[in-house]
View 1: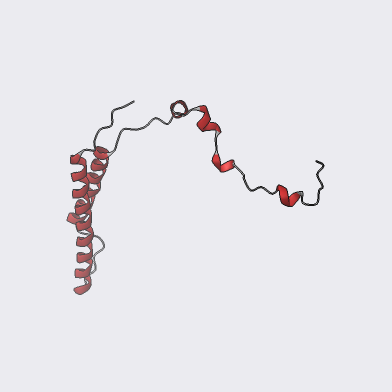
View 2: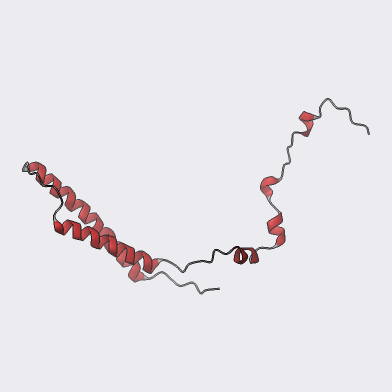
Length: 113
């Protein structure tokens, strides 16, 4: 079993910085479009600095996620089955029926005692 390690604070800081850059690039885009409306300007794209800021924020966010993420867990069925006993596998409370329809189905049938 692998030892659990604490998430990297560097990764958390990178994610926070990436979020702030992403938010700022969105705000800059809004301001740029508002400016274009005010001066009746027609431009086909965003300025290069906003696009670069957005791409840097996405790359920094990806790096932060990689640093914060834990180790992969095995997805083999044998590993999961080894952790459980046969009693826990056989007992499924969702299939227990305490209020069944036997009384409604056999209400006209006379049973011999």
